[in-house]
Amino acid sequence: MTRKKTAGSEQAEPAGDIDLKAAYKYDPAEISTEITVSRYSNLAYIQVSPRDVCIDFLEMPGIRKGGKMVVGGARIYMSHDSARRLADTLGDVLEKAGTGAFMKGGRK
Image 1: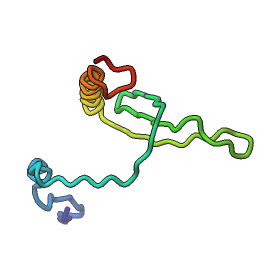
Image 2: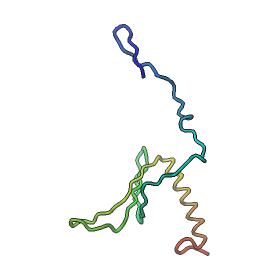
Image 3: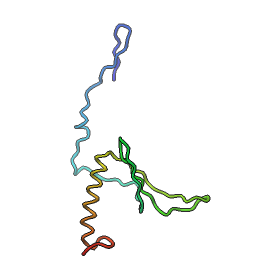
Image 4: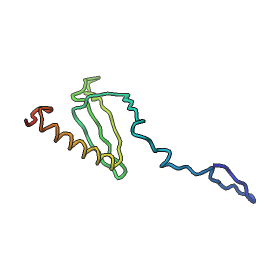
């Protein structure tokens, strides 16, 4: 933003309009995934706040250090809409996988 001086005061003046829709528009073919961390989790804790959803993916049982059990993990924050889509997609995928021999105890 630029500043414009007027009779003893300064007012902010917009430097230009930014079209956020155009800035975030992309062709799905242009997406290149870059996974920086890969971990295995066998336990997840989910917390929900009015603003977002937090999922802690934990690596149980952990390692004993200094007399305490230290559990590694990763924390992911998501919007409510993103978490809802994740839950729906995960449910669909697990249902499909459960009907084949993909999952332990799956139906054939």
